Image (cartoon, rainbow, N blue to C red):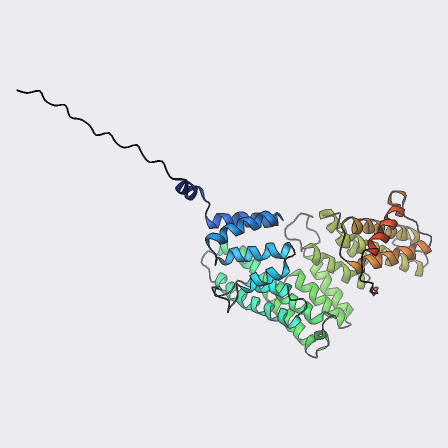
Length: 383
């Protein structure tokens, strides 16, 4: 009997290592992850880095509407206005691949980019409102009320801002629209719609107060303003329910028009608690103290137990701070710069000097150099 031949096992071939391409695919983040990261970077104002993540997303998904929207924001924030306009237009019909319905944000940004074309801006605002109203109706019908409540509130706020945007265009003296016979009734209708959607919206109430001021109805304006302010004046400086700083600055301006100095100063203190380098806040505080000093002189020398000289001194110090910040930030607002210069000159003539720590002699030289860099040469109307 012959020997049994031992069975031989066939050796298994070694497992093939994944190719470089497979490894890259395995580690490549999803488009959604790329866009989420880009959005985070936009919030952090890291626009250059955000743009790189968006570009990667668009390489893999060229018609992705969210990616295009973020790209447009990056372009807008980095000064590429024409590119931003084209990006947002690519999200609207009849552009190939435009989503339906179009994202309302595209219309809102295009309204912002159409500041030299008021009729176009109005059309974009109206289109955004139309889409947002459809979204709002969908959210109101949502079964999960708790999860949709925040989204619904945010949608309402966005609709109101779009309506107010239209009011501001109709009221802007730079446009001929403010002379249109229909301007006043259009503003009334837009604000009525805004307050029906969100009755306690402070920005809508402030806009209504501005309209009342333009209609020479100051007492009604005062009543509306006090209602708006009462809704948030006791909130902490870091409370997310506070109106944005530009809205609070506008509120301050209306308070000053109505000679409501104490609430104006209280609003400005809240703004400075959030940002103590806000140029316009320092300007308005200096302007407020200047107006109070004028009133004190007319009333015999005092206002709220403060002499006109004390008030004027406070005004000078605020204006000197504003001037320094304006220079250091290369702030673009020329009317503020010119008005601050005028007010400081008036105070100087009254013998009001800057405090020692605010001695503005060095700033005066820089201020003159800074003015020399402005080639506009145009006269600025003082308020």
